[in-house]
Length: 178
Length: 458
Image 1 (cartoon, one colour):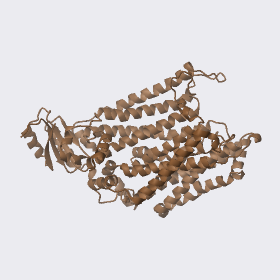
Image 2 (cartoon, chains in turn cyan, orange; image 1 turned 90 degrees about the vertical axis):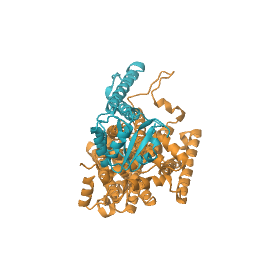
Image 3 (cartoon, chains in turn purple, brown; image 1 turned 180 degrees about the horizontal axis):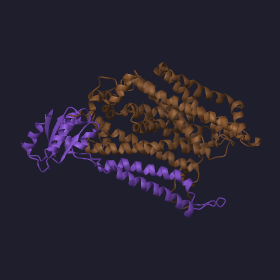
Image 4 (tube, one colour; image 1 turned 45 degrees about the vertical axis):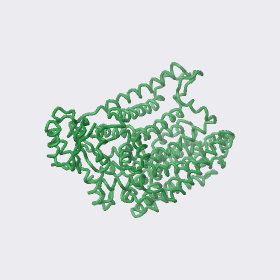
């Protein structure tokens, strides 16, 4: 046999319930570097693999603050400093008139931060990833559920980890070449 | 989801998704429309006609650029005419998509999962059609970029106290956020198409667009957070857009425009016409592509109820306008109401009441709400009515304002009609392409509606 480096061992399940249960057991067995794949969001799954918080809300907050501030300051600078127009002595810093654009800029920046922040934190776009080497993984976007234990995990040992996954009653098990 | 099945049984309503579907059948059914179903003659005929109408739009715009806005019917005192009527009509239609995807998501109306994707696509095409009008109406369209604040050697800036500048920001933000919302929703489905496609080119293109999505639990976690936050951001946004459009009128002092009821009444009207357009598209699409199992009578019924509710808010707006004209006692407002009822455009004002207020009351009858052909007809009547509403607001208010010496009449020319019909062609042409190239129903959100998607506690 060729000795290609192994990225991890992957087990396939039929239902989200099976996957969540397997992920929970894997975590409890002390495996840290694991991941699970499902064709739709499964709320309990992130919890089961020990992923509780993500950075998206903070990114969105920063984006929104940045958008709102830059929106207001831009209008203030333009209307009161760079290009003041005196209309019957009315105040140049006429904040009620600036609210609409400030609001729209807040939403625009926060929305862009949400989408691109999510993609960046997820490391996407990523054209190549070792899990795509497994032919059955094509069903991860249809109706199958996968659990992987990465070879970088401290507890990983080729034979033992495979035996552990077999104990979880998966539909199939495959090695993921990196 | 359990609540849904239960309540639908209690009220003897149609289910959100036909029983008997699994993850695999949902995936295959929706993706096969894009991947394996051959394009029929009917599709080619429909696409061909709408494509030709789009070419007519380009011809009309090309001639406009050559000769100027004088080829249209706009004159003083009616400087706004068809361009602004159509702009407001289209942007109103564009409200249903984001309402369905964002507001109904926050309200946990899971039935929205089968109609949000194509409603969002409809929104994008409608906003694109809307955006054309102000840009070509400015007279010197090659200077449209002056609308944006950019450092320039002339040392001038846009006037941020003008509703017209607010509108630029509102509409461009709305388009951008709608596009992002639509695209983020598409990513997991593009990955499904990438993995299902037999064709090398299709696999490559869907693969590039899916950006390597693999459905990791960590990714889903961030994805769900981002999607929810985006929905929370889009909710006030969708309400703000037509509010800002109504400011274009309400901040002016013309009788019939200068009123505080405009923002809520415009937003309700926008949702009203948006749902009418959703139904006009959904009813033929579900029939042609055999999607009655996903877009069930429940969806038609709920959409009809939303139309009925927003239609009543619009009716309230009309009544208050008439009441305030009388109660305020301002002679110009009194004249405006008289002019609407008896002036040269009175026929259209009466037709507006028939289309928007009287006819839709039949939606109180459940039997009629569950009749697709009838709903299609009613939606068409509502869309006509909403177009007439904008015509009344723009033209009837402007044509007779304060001084009899500045009274005038507005007659659209064939170039006005060609541009208007052309945008309808462009909108439908884009829809024809969309249903063939992208999954028109969100596959991954449909999977979550299935009972087996629920994780059972041990």
